[in-house]
Amino acid sequence: MGGHLWGEIDPRLMKVASVFGGGVAGTREELCGVLSAAAMIIGLLYGRTGPGEDEQISRTLIPRYRERLIAEFGTTQCRPLRVRFRGPDENAGTCAPLVEKATLMLLELLDEQGPQGR
Image (cartoon, helix red, strand yellow):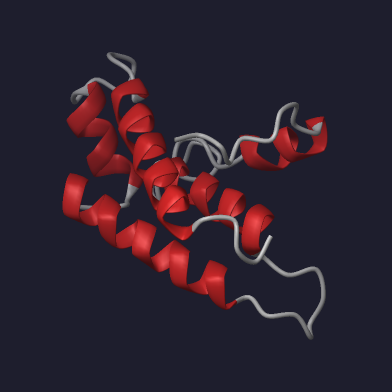
């Protein structure tokens, strides 16, 4: 597992991704950052670079990943997940266990898909 990792990440991608933490810029009202990040990673691996290219793999994988998150955690919305993992005090605890489990789930999905389409 993990053969999908590609080494050093362009700092511009990190800047783009950084705004999705806390349910989109810390609002905690939108989707969890793990789903946003997974969508970006799947798009990077299987997305298109122009309007004529096939994006079916990414359009299949992202909903499958979302369904797995819901099956595991009950939701993909930030606030209920933060309460579950951090407790009612927003400054207590960490979402690290959620991120770790969600990352492993993404790697499993990518392993199932394999390298086709990249």
